[in-house]
Length: 620
Image 1 (cartoon, rainbow, N blue to C red):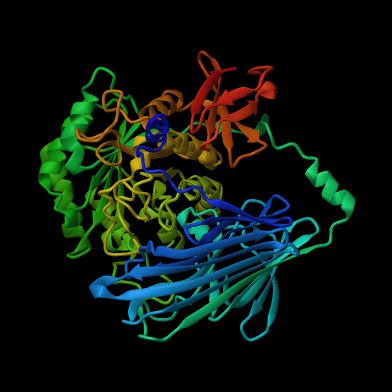
Image 2: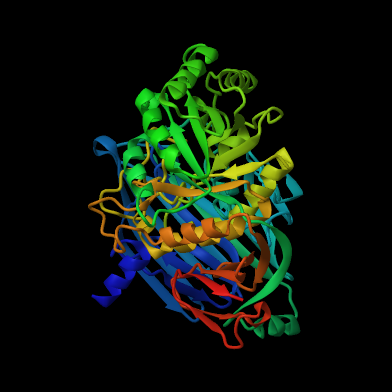
């Protein structure tokens, strides 16, 4: 019972993630979870983030197949795994999968998958996905063999590629660590790679089949689909090199002062018309947050109309900071007519925001490679109409969806006062480790935005674990059972300490970008700081995220200094100067207690013990 209560406080759910099984073959290890492999390491160093056999539906949702007949054999020479799996599709359609995995001590790993359907099966993708890590790998040389046998010596992209960096792939070889190379060979179909950092995934993804081919497509009845992935490790190190690597101590996380400095961003909160009245009530509480920015959302296609601005005006009247209105412009009538109408509604309600952020409604939807761009007025015309409709108000642009869409449709920024986009960590995967690993991708996202837009004021958010809008399908996924599922519009971890640690890690990961404003969540509702009446959250309905957002809003505008972590996948930190002295913000990103050496930060001569997913603020 105690374990269940602890899990609830950490994750907002008593449902536990099944623990992966560690497989070992000499220096090669892998975690087996749900029939797939992740954290594939050689001599303790991550070589591949995952090899997964995935099946996607027509909305790019990932099936959770029923696994049966699982058999695992482990010997001194290596391991083998075999299992069957079944996906249940619409209208009684079925897809059966047979998988076999073998790892050997000579550094070879083979994963075979055979799919077939008695009924025929509709899918957007069926087959292997291979994830390469990004930290220490981005921008490094790789060798790509194409399906026609051509060999290409190139590099993994450093700045995030909007389109596929490599196509028509048969294999890719990279250097995992000095003296160790890893070749990943893909057979059975044509593979290509996309830069998953676009979606804040911490990986490059090599997948089947090419996006230029039509989707969804049908796997024909009784038509088998066979694929195989082979990982081959080549280790040319000397015995002394291996001994030196083994001598490194990874038991304690060491924090040391970094060189980067800057100013903490303003902290914003999202207010939607649906939550406006509850948000007003929350702001009238004695312990209400005093954030710097309120971001009001307005979408005529969602039924938002003049009454929304009456509520917005009431909230603005008691808010002491700045306000921004983000508008999903319908672009169904003349632009001037649509925006002038919204402007008139604002004036009639007495709502006068400090800034406007406009984005064509259709641009929230993704346009994948090979797809036709939807009809949309030129963005320059949209911005010109907005400047005319809202004279004297700062005008921002970008995307109401994610960096992916901004990277693929780069808005003209000349007449914009700021650029903005969101992120979401559960687009492709929703397990605890994958969600927290998305923090690794954020510095690459902000660096890529800066490469495109230079020093223009830059905002991020709202960026929450639950997904507020799905650019890649017709809907977000309902989650009535509170599971860990991709693209879910409600997320149990948003109620737990996990979300607080994620938020603290998030701000640490984007400090280098020099953001003007960071909006991590809404004030109320499923994306908010306050839980709903029927949600099982303690502390007067405040989610654990409340304390982190309050703390960040208290230090907004102060000077920060980077902190270097010896294990940034486990612990992130920064320091900030305040009127009361220097503070250290430290976040444990893991489900295990972490022992942290803070002596070089001037905190303690003894290691600091940080509880699972604890976001800690200490005086220096």
